[in-house]
Length: 264
Image 1 (tube, one colour):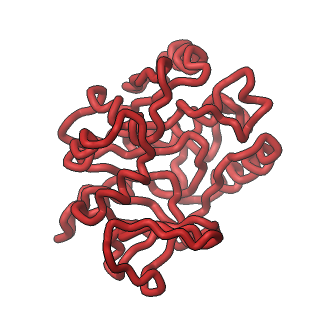
Image 2 (cartoon, rainbow, N blue to C red; image 1 turned 180 degrees about the horizontal axis):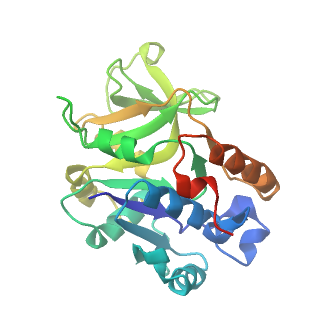
């Protein structure tokens, strides 16, 4: 079984004025809302259960799913209408909606990429003689100001902002110059063991804060895709660029057939 969570509760402030009247998840890129693009990718990867969290214009998302009969999938809604719980709190709030025996793939609704989600999920489950990590984070060599830090075995050891020089790590001694530095892609898989560990966190918390506080005791690893093609749909004026990006992905022969010719 493969199961996933789509973060769709955010306020979408970077996409204003569009998100003054709709949730970010329903902003269209090409012929479909962002939410549908991510659902299609997960379905093509064989995901059998999807949980979508909602807050901003929550009824529009639940109405969209209901109007489309959840696209024939097992899609469940984690309601954060009363209080936005941030990424980590949102995951913990949704836990009762998941199968408690399988890892959970977490995907930001505004991320478009060419990653093979099935291969990524399978890697998080271990195999080929490798033990399953507690979490697996998709990372790339994308240029940014904020990076996750990994040791030579790709185990997470910290975080840095190269613009300000800030470093965060649970380790007393960390030589940042010896660390591997990669950008987080907003897609990750959490084991049930690590999900249970979120019980120690406050009600509202970012998932990266949890990873950084846990990486000394939990096996949190990076999964580098050096040729990753990824776009964060951040602003309204990038929507045309995002549509062109999707069209370029759909032309790639390795993409699932259902994604090469998106439904109108």
